[in-house]
Image (cartoon, rainbow, N blue to C red):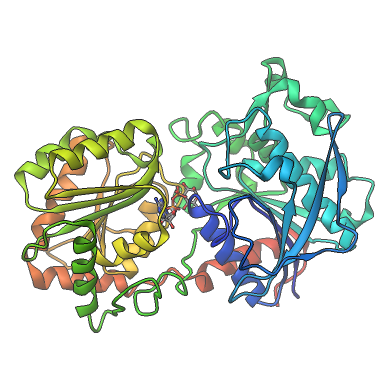
Length: 487
Ligand code: ADP
Ligand code: GLC
């Protein structure tokens, strides 16, 4: 049997991306569509989306649909479109008043309205199309209210009578917490459904509401599923998650190897494979040349591509990096944007080590691919990491990951054992400077042994984290929820 799945998301590769949610939304829905399911994706038509290359078809009955949010009426129009290379149904929600902003996410006072509109519009689209989803798959706080809306606002509609909800938590660090004053804008009369203690404390949390009401909760790796049930990682939601533990599962993200494989990556000047690694060296030269760094003979390059936020563990690099750069010969290439503190830190590092460090501030997909291909090592010292995609990309690109043992990093990278020759990266446990320096030094040391290093690269390249393996777990979950077996 195939399922009708409404997939509601705030990011989708290649149209709207700030991080891994975009890649996962794109690849998982493509996988599900490929398996014959009727997947329909709902995404805001952000101002940032380049419309020139898209064929936008207005959906009949879904033009200028009014939505009342706390006495103010917004109207949206839905446009159907197809992404190049994939033909699942994609519906873009056009509401310029809310989505014509310079970035996907904002700190504007109406941020809650922006994503309330997305959630309401997704459900109204199902109604307008007369399409009854068996599963509404929600992602992160931006879609966390949908399970409650289905139990309240839309309960009257038999279209949703058998609809089940899944909420995937990609990152518990973002909860969508708003002042209780927004309660009227939710449009639900039954206040008793809201988290009463939060209301008393003057707050409404979209993610928490989703955790309360979704039929099933998933997160993006088995280790993170365990971690978020503890005080250290749960960010205040651990008790609630423990309470729902029998409806919570960790499903590791997959990789879309159509986008991220050095053999076929169209963004690389020099494709390569495990059998012929010569292109990797050419990419490395190109990377260094392009960034104005001296090439050097077999000098290792460490890459880091990341949102520059506390989550990514930059704190433990702060003090040791300058020492390490003085002591050891390596190049550091950093691509990222985010918190001002970290932008300044990496700018200063580049100023202090102009022949060794390059910091490229901003979002640049092509450069991200070139770093994956041209670097020798990839650094992810995350404080926490729900899954992480870059370590999996790195493995496929023969770029040995140096990671902290947390969340999805712990599930995908195994410590290299020089004696036995197994493992595929450098993994450290403790969240401190000594531990990350240990791992980086170990990697730099092994790099000197060309034969061992090449073997290590190849063992990572042979791993398979494709959605073909991971996607079936979502199908099984939908089957369990709906009582309809997967064909
Ligand atoms: P997160 O979602 O927490 O940011 P992931 O590892 O899951 O972490 O995914 C990050 C994704 O975003 C990867 O595809 C990575 O290449 C990409 N990315 C992050 N920062 C940048 C950037 N500055 N430029 C281009 N791509 C980036
Ligand atoms: C989040 C997490 C990241 C994960 C991504 C996709 O942004 O920080 O670890 O890979 O979502 O699930």
